[in-house]
Image (cartoon, rainbow, N blue to C red):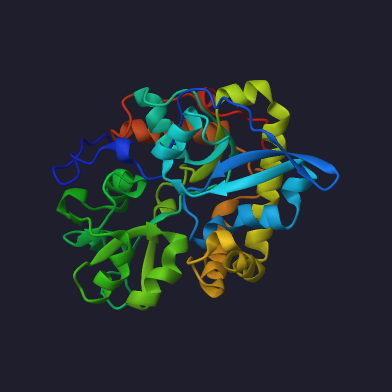
Length: 343
């Protein structure tokens, strides 16, 4: 495994701003109870990964609308997440009971000691969603052709922090790439007019980018960093210790919603676009396309069950993050994952 220090173009990008991570103090406080019909439902709050407006977040609304949470005795309040750091902060302060956490950012925060009182309980994305997109007619046909380009990035985001590893494994020097950080909603338009040669994105964001930039070519990080997971559900260690059955119940319902969304993307898009909480977000066809693209990343192989972590893969991922200088120390899988909470 290569061990290369940060280059000058990305040295200043702090892992602390990773946009897609983990937790500190107890997720305390009563969740309360809510009376619905003749059934007592326990109300819990959950943060999405980022906002409420991307179709990839439809699974929580689907699990709610199709009654999966109610079957588990849960009433769910879906809240707009603001990336891993904020999500972990809100877990720590008890503002939410559950949150979407980027696994690699979570390991990074844990290794730094920034957030340690959290636990991951179920995998959402078995592989990273991160990628680089370029116009299809750009002449960039393989990752190493990105050398010398100007790339739109989110400073401190997981894609940005892991880009040097992706670049080196793809055979080019990450230091030759010039980073630019305009507002992410402008990425597609700037790609279309040639102000950017490439953009860092999530693979499921392709429909949005193509609306502005036309057909694009996608270079997924998962092609070279296949050991790394994407996002997961997490809670505080306190909640896990006090009510493991609630954690299991929540995960069962959420994972049923996720499975339904990727197996039925058109329906997922309609439910997403028609729900009040997603007002102003993606229209149904775009949300449907996101869920269709999400499918292969939800469960990348047949060996693991939906939601299940592989401790060997986690250990390999921790080693990769340390090898490329993302973390200073490796994290043991058992430090951050509760392995029996996904069903």
